[in-house]
Every structure is written in structure tokens, then in C-alpha cells.
Amino acid sequence: MIRFLTAKEIWPRITELAKKTKKAHVAVAYFGQDARQLLPLRSGSVLVVDCHPKSVKGGRTCPHDLLALIKKKVEVHSCSNLHAKVFVFGNRAIIGSANASKLSRNYLLEAAVETTDKETVAECLKFINSLRGDQISPKYAKRRCKIWNPPKIAGLPTKPDQSPRFHPLWVVPLVLKEWDEVDDRQDAQAEPVAQKKLKDRKRFLLDKFHWHGGDKLGATVKVGHQLLQVLEEGNSQWVSPPSRCSVETPVVAEASNWA
Image (cartoon, rainbow, N blue to C red; front, side):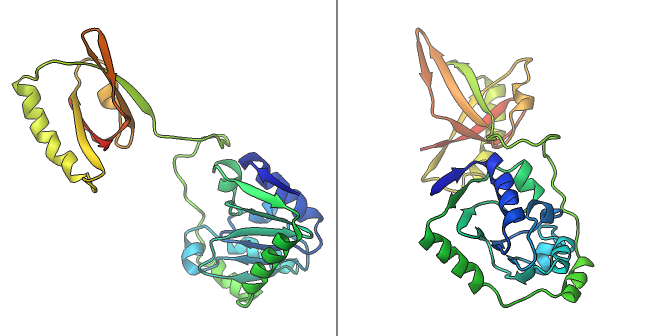
């Protein structure tokens, strides 16, 4: 059996399997605050995480949660360059992108595959066991608790949301006309700034248009937003490829186009 797990399916499935598996084996890079609720491993299970001081100070791995599992007789190890997310529950394995964190469960667009293929499960188990060797003792975990900082993540929605998020795409209607002296002066100020932001001039070119009026476009478009220019010329309309806004000014928008 092999099946694809979507973002909303991953953690309910992992939590369910962790609760009923007598001895699970897990290698997951980051083990965040309250991760022991997402991954309620039973006594005798093996867990490998990244418990490097940088990961602890940054709030990505929570030693308080690790200590709670250690007290439950879960064997916990640290591997500082671990980035994999591999879960083995008996005769099945889940391999994907999800760290053990509320951020992963509620906001990130994760993906994973669950399989009962014997050879794949055996290789996953072999991989996890190969990472054992730097076991975390209760004393060591307590020392790490002193340097742990709660994670600080700004800009998250108030409610859980795992829908895809992209930069906004603005459709800008334009007409062909001559620029006046003011337009040229503002263009001369904005263009050098935009040119400096083109890191690869072989792949990107600078495109620009003049926009004025009382609407909110100039104040709303941000660096990184996408622009789709629709130019009206007589009875024809020309649609440009999407471009990326690289610098903002009140009147002139400079955008980098894919060449």
C-alpha cells in the first residue's frame, strides 16, 4: 500500500499511529513546543531530532517536550544536521516534509507519503537507527531547557489555514502615450534603483510603466508582487508576461520581467 497524505491529513494520521504503535521509530528535524501532543510516542520508542543549541535557542526544538518523552522511557537522540522527516510505525512508514510543530500542523503546506512496502519500511528503519549515538539524557535536556526560547513567528493568520499562498497578481490596464518632463524625471530617479536589484541581467530585464491617479495601486503594490500589464493600443490589446515588482515609488513602478 502507498498513499499520498495532504497537509490536513498528515498530523491526524501520525498522531493516530503514534498512539497505538508500541515501539515507533522517528527521525524528525525539529520538535517544537507541545510536539509531544502531536507525536505521543510510547515507552520504548526511538526519536532522533536536531537538538543543537541554535535550534533550541531559536525555538525550533523544545527540550521541555523532549524531557517529557524521556521521562516516559522514550529513547531520544540528537543529530545536528538532520533535516529528514521519517516516521516508522510498525509495518508502515510515513516520509514527508513535516516537522513536529504546531506551525506544521496548522499553517504550512506539507505533503507526505504513507507506505507499507516492506523494503521501503525496512530502509526507513535502517536510516533512523543509523542516526542513534548521541543520546539525550534527562540532565542534558534540563540544561537545554535553560537556553530555550519560545518560537516567534509573525504574520500568521488568526485561525489555522493551510491553503496555498502566493504573491498577489495585479492586472494593470495601460494605454500608450508620451511621457512628459515630470514623468521622465521620476523615471530617472527610479530606474537606477531598480537596475541594482537585477541580480541576473541575462535572465531578467527591466520593464516600467507610468501610473497616476487617485486609486490605491501605488500604495498597495509591494515589492515582490506580480504585475500583469494589459496595453490597449487602438482596437488591440497586448498582454505582457507576469513581472515582479522590484522597487516602489509614488508614481513609477519598476518591474523585472523574465526574459
